[in-house]
Amino acid sequence: MARTLLGAILNRASTATQTPVPFASRSQSYGRGLFGSSRGTTAQLDAMGAVSTLFAIVNRTAKAEAGVEWGLYRKAKSGKKEDRTPVTSHAALDLWDQPNPFYTQSVFVEAGAQHKQLTGETWWVIARDERSTLPLEMWVVRPDRLTPVPDAERFLSGYMYTGPDGQEVALRKEDVIFIRTPHPTDPYRGIGPVQALLTDLDAVRYSAEWNRSFFLNSAEPGGIIEVPNGLSDQEFDELRDRWNEQHKGVANAHRVAILEHGQWKDRKFTQRDMQFAELRNLSREVIREAFGFPKPMTGAVDDVNRANGDSGERMFARWLLVPDLEAIRDALNHQLLPLYGATGNGLEFDFVNPVPDDVESEATQLTARANAAKALGETGLWDADDILSAVGLPEMRRAAVTVPAPTAVPAASWDDAVAGLLGTEVEAAQRWVAVCVDDENSCQPCKDNNGQLYRNRAQAYEDYPGGSGYIHCVGAEYGNDCRCKVVKRRKTGDDE
Image 1 (cartoon, rainbow, N blue to C red):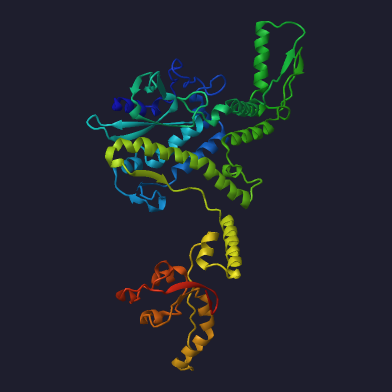
Image 2 (image 1 turned 90 degrees about the horizontal axis):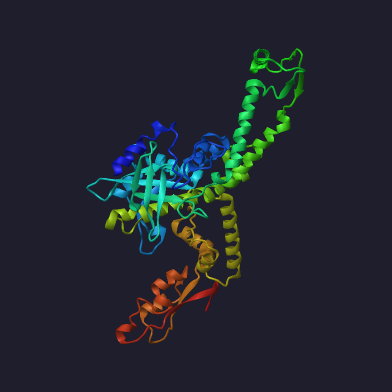
């Protein structure tokens, strides 16, 4: 069954000029023409090659999606992405890297993205060997070739593929992966911006055709030749041939017409009257609006600067790329990986986030956090680590201060000098102090550590777990609990 379908798919390129067999009895997928009365899925696909603005939007979006990096990971018990383990060898990963002998991953994703942008639907068909249930190949299939088959009890019984020659192939649900933008009135199909744009796309196409005709023959005659008396067939043919000979074509544009026994009445509209330039500009805006596509990403630079260019790039990635990539990720994780049975358990596909960093915004936030940390630190009421955590900054270690010793000063004198210069500053940086009850019941290790300074709470709690009880206390050997603790220093030399 799968090989029969693949044969029809592989022949689709050679039959591109054939008129598809109508299949309207089951769906409205097919359309006979490109514009006008045709509103089917075929017309939506063909529209990409007929309107330049639409081509630019779909092409840029599809290529951007195709360039995103993917990976396979083993989920972590914590549920955090940063704790996942990359998987470098798996049959599903090999299939995703090259879905079939003719498509690499990038081409596969790009083709599916084109379909999604134009029709709101992406269809993947799974090919298997008859001797195995594991997927061997995946193929992107045109949306106008596949039709869901509803079921009154199970909602969906399968799909029907119709080839270019009208051949129909029934597909099981597990043979098809369907990614779509849900249609508001049809739960079996998807919807895309082009469906809302077909009338506007007609106008763009027809205005382009009118302009083309203008350059071919100046869009003439654009008027009426009136004669006082009727013409015989021979006279009519002679007048028509003479007119075409003298005025048809670019080389004969705007030649003066000489009429015998006739009167010319102008009935044409000029390009200015039709306002085609304004019409085409308006249509571009309508197309971009339907896709939510930022103007700078189309290559327009007339009113683009660095700020709105960067903003447009981030908006493009965040609101156009990421939702489609998330839909692909869901299809891979919830429809493809389960086909591999137990070997797919605990695994998930994921993509590298394509949204560029907002460097300016991040710098502004970092400055605001640093200022907040400085203001809290100057009060002297809070621990440095707590301040960093409160303002969202990572823990930082104080850099050691080193000063090269001059050769003229003896080493011992230099050490004394450095201690004198830096002693106060180093001591001020120590925010915790060990406090020992010094009496005849105190052990020697506790007495020796009394007054010991620590940089932060974490360091102090290493010697005094939980804030009390010195780890080297020997009182426990005699049945006594350690009475020592660490306390936070308020100011240099003043302890709690």
